[in-house]
Length: 405
Ligand code: HEM
Image (cartoon, rainbow, N blue to C red; front, side):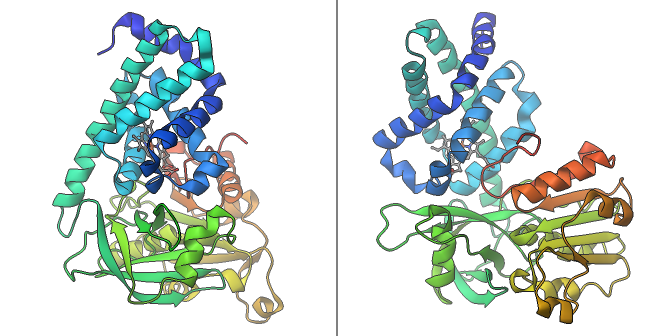
């Protein structure tokens, strides 16, 4: 436990570090990757280039520091990050490396303002925060490897089937190479895929939501081809689309994530997705009709048009059920879409439309999609009086904020 003096130093210097937050973490990454280039096998290079991970780590260290005398209060946040860390294979021995370089960067950026007293206080605080993560992650590793069909780290899976779902989305059905059992998952969870790309020095790890219902002998991911190379964002997805074929081996970590459908509740549920944000929502939809067949479900999916609308048959096959309502929104429908009545509403999912069509503001709301879609849905739900504890969402990539611009 930190003494009162240290806690005071930490709390009073949080605003200073926040002010220099991005400069410190940018320098931190430069120093850390300089001394430990092997960590480039774990970190997402695209996130690095866009500065998203810089913001994520800086923000969390300062947020945690503000709660340094009561870390319990931010346990849900720690758990959510710990899921991601466990899925990536972050271990206790990585924490001192991050701590050392973070302190070096703080010292460098703050210069004379960083007295020994301040640096020592932050070293202690980082140790406490790191221990909290390490403890939660240790439990998660144990759980992942002890459950039936579970495993620790990355396991070989064969691409059993590769199915094109739209112009931009392709599904991969993954079966374990050892033909043994696979761990169950909760609808909404994701797996990490570790890829070695020919000619690349470091491995790439990406998370993909599982798009089918649990209980199968395979995991299915449905991957959107992101804007192409040289944009590093698209490197992995283009490789999966263009190079990885049926029969090939992919390295997969056990399912993780806390954005999951609560099947203990019986309230109506509203699932909203934009684009490839469809994947966790489809898993939730298929699960709810299987395990809670009486539950009222509203499934809303927004896509540009029929050419990029994936997995529609799977959703449509459930629309005959009395308690399932589905709505497809296209903002740029083609002539073909109009001729075939491929969509229900032209345009975006608006607050007015939600007011008129959702069963009740007391429903449980889950959503996933591009950030502008999520911001708009989040604002609409708040405006129409949906209580905060009924709003659940998932970002692709590092967590961001829906509140700020
Ligand atoms: C992701 C915080 C330690 C590697 C993240 C995220 C946060 C975070 C907020 C984003 C989570 C998300 O998007 O869901 C922290 C904090 C740490 C810490 C506060 C220390 C107390 C570490 C360590 C490593 C590490 C020790 C490994 C050396 C990663 C990686 C990602 C990540 C690889 C995925 C994002 C990317 O690849 O850019 N961390 N982290 N973190 N963290 Fe940590």
